[in-house]
Length: 230
Image 1 (cartoon, rainbow, N blue to C red):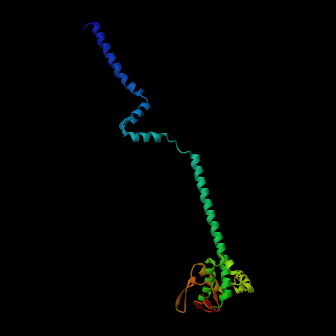
Image 2 (image 1 turned 135 degrees about the vertical axis):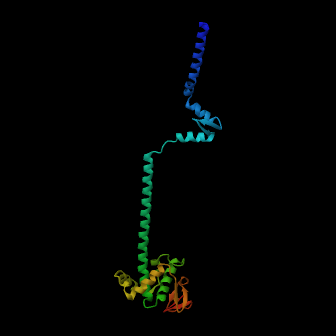
Image 3 (image 1 turned 45 degrees about the vertical axis):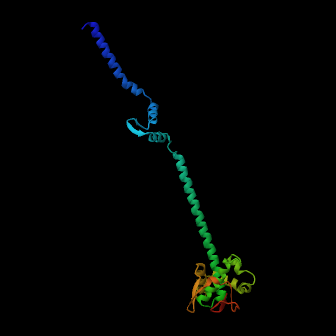
């Protein structure tokens, strides 16, 4: 082979090697955006060697662009939630305290009026008097508070006569925990707890029906101990 032909062969081989070596280099220069574009441009493509669909490729890109939650904001949200829970607990505690206070006031007044009106009667008689009072509180025809019902003009003799005032003082002295008055306290407590059924002379009586009582009533529906009830 002549020298020219030998040189030509060497140059050709060098050129081929140069082109072959340049292919990986060109591949490395391909931009990430081109790769992403190729991912988005086909239904099923290969992205960084992983086969994926167009939709999954979009989701992967979208997720990569979501910023991490700010730690300060997360902490502030937790603190705000804790403050909200604390306020709710405080509100419930105040409501319970107010309810207990109202209950104690109601128990005091109801026990006193029961003793004034039926202190010497049986349990059913005391319960019936307490029931009439509370039935009036719940009725549209009477005041809607216990005090309003008891102090309604011309309704309860012990209020006008001053006996009720004396019994309220006796309650405050703790005398309603003693045998003479304890039965009236028990009846008042049971009515406030929602117990409106009693047994008397072998019969079960629903006390929710009655709004009036007296020694003698012309329209009486039942007589319990020393009172007629209607």
